[in-house]
Image (cartoon, rainbow over all chains, first blue to last red):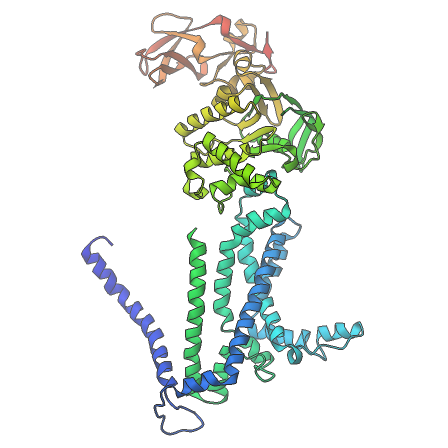
Length: 290
Length: 334
């Protein structure tokens, strides 16, 4: 890419893919923005008049919106806490030399390969079902009342399921980080008088910091858009107890056939996701610099 | 105080015997170098002393008390690792402070010792940098600083200079020697480089296959190598070893003569050969001489400005008072 000619040739050759990607992004975004300012309900065919910010006002003042925001934050925060803490613990355990290490590692990673709908259904019907589920059976075996997970603690149950799915990912990333830790550093710390806890606190944790931020970043992106698990288990209910932002947009546009409000919700979700992204990028930037 | 004694120490990794039963005394204030080819068990031996590996059998005494089962931190030893093992996320100051922080020494005393160590090691300007921003030699000094502030009974060095370039290595060698004369603390130093061993040690321990081949001062080892292995290992360039008629005539199976104990002449001498490769170092010239009935070339040291070239005929005369004779088992004959 040294000469002027080769540089402009490169630009010409790269142009189609750039244009394609731009179109791919801009056309749906533009259409969403356009729909979000129309009164556009599939149940009321006819004219779709321009209504300005009415859809936004409606969406943002809907009591379900506040619930959805809180639920989204709880879901993301809860799953992140469980997977990061659990991932650190599992990574350190799996890093220990032990018999059958290879098989154990594959078993730990396995849940990640189960698709969300399937794993949510398995949890719903085989484990958490208050009549036929394994947990109900165990509770009855020790003489306790079976716990109706999705009725009594819908969001916590979903957090549990999603954590189960994402724990392997966190473990995998953190395990590779642990394996790249120079054993001489741990030995030096041991000679310097650091006990197991001090070694964890002063050597292992700082070493894993970068991997932890990567886990948080990637998981947040995916956790903000959790949908399948909610759809197949609680359908957002009871009421709005397990409705997150993604599910609320779905409910507006596809259950109430209100394309206009749904689009407005989509735009709101994009803005919120970007706010989160800015915070995360700052955090990552600080951590990746050093 | 830093007197270390090993009694019948062995170490096995699975079925492999890395250290055979071994006895060794290290006196207080001594600079002891473990030297040997890679895989001879010298690093393992150091790690046994440090407590980073458990002995399979035998006893390790530090200052007369049994330290075999004592955890590494409680042995009062400080170690400098080959990779320096600095903590990358801490500044130099925090790195040096770490062992004192773990020992719960108060802040004032910590700072006093850090400043003293930094001044001694020329690190004062770098105290707030991270290890990643330092050069190899500076990192090495930080690692030494971290060891010094603990005021240990003995320092353990595990090939500390092998990651440095040649010029820096010579400089650091001097600094470590100087540190030893200043602190008068016991130092145990592992290296595969016999030049480091010769220049730094009070006492050299030559190891091979987990067995001590010889213990002695550098000059003892140079003058009277106990066996063929030590004879070949100590001294640079290596001692010439010859078998056959020349050895039998001197009443030995193998006899050795160092390159510096052979007189080279273009006109007369005991052996005749042709010059192969010659290395001109300015102060010295080393000729690799090919002889008719001796397969390996003989290395000879001559004065700096002897002008002999590839293919010239050369005559060699060994100094018969400086030859080393070895028997069938490779042990020295006296």
